[in-house]
Amino acid sequence: MARAALREPDLPVAVLVGPEQEVRLLADHRDDLVGERGHIQKRLRWHLHDLECGLELPPGCWTATCGSSASKRRCTACRPAHAAA
Image (cartoon, rainbow, N blue to C red; front, side, top):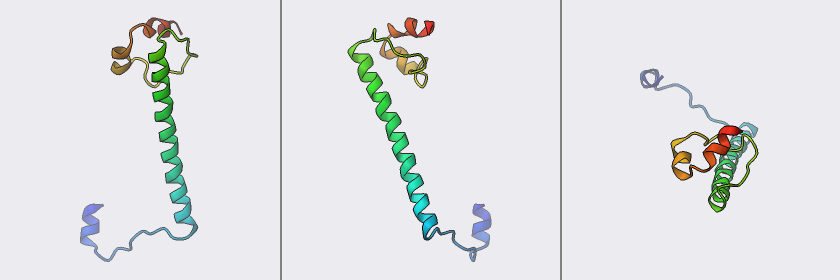
């Protein structure tokens, strides 16, 4: 695509105007908020984990980090309980 753009300097520029631009901005903002929420949830779970490693968590709540090298380094006491879940 880059080569075609260089060969054809008269190609129209894609621009969103009106409601399309507003929808795009809202969708981008929503994506940012969803990502931020996920980061906050992960940080909260680690804070809870650090406060009490024996805390009983519902199945599947650590699925994003379970088994990762970071979670194995943080605490080994929760792995046996997690393996049973």
